[in-house]
Amino acid sequence: MSLTACTGEPAAEPTPTRTASASPTAEPTPTPTTTPEPERPTAMDDPGVDGAVAAATYFLSLYPYVYNTGDLTAWKALSHPECVFCASVSSSVDEMHALGQRQEGTELTLVPRESAEVEAGVWFSVRLDVAQGEWTVVGLQGEPVRSGPAQNYAFTLAVVRDSERWVIRAAEATPSA
Image (cartoon, rainbow, N blue to C red; front, side, top):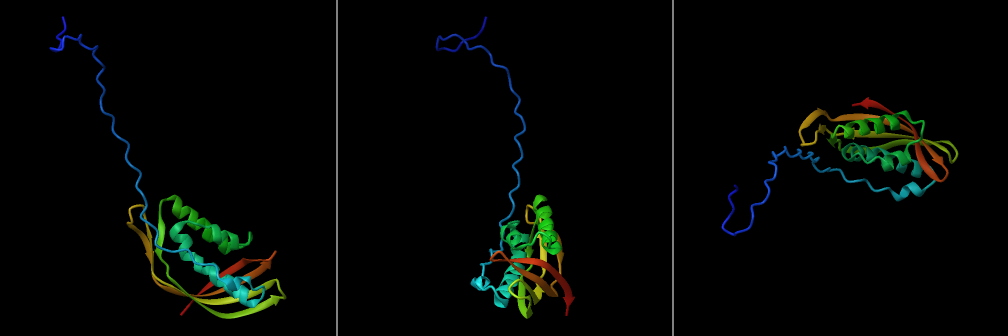
């Protein structure tokens, strides 16, 4: 005989007891990025030396942005398919962001030094002095993973005018004082 409540209604069939399952752990959310996307300079519309210098400067100014955000759209648009430096940066950024990491810091000061038109309207050489600030790679929770000191480089870039747009064909960095 089953006990019923005072309502006079029959007792409900017993339901199987369920054990509480562990609730899934929430995925950690990365801390917000801090590097704004650089603006494309209007000087890049110039098909001559000034445009090549603007393209090289803009390209290198994307460096902190791509490492901080993982957004390689503008970087890849300016990268020639055979540019080893360009591909190396893209690979490093992809690997770091696949691990849930990003780079903070990497403030750059870019100073154009020399530029030359190597082949009329097509090939240009641009040399920039680059001062890179201290940087830190941080994990998902903002914890430091690794860091590096401020450094100075002399960058030489081969800049090509290809189908009305600029692309970086090669880039070489040499540590400088």
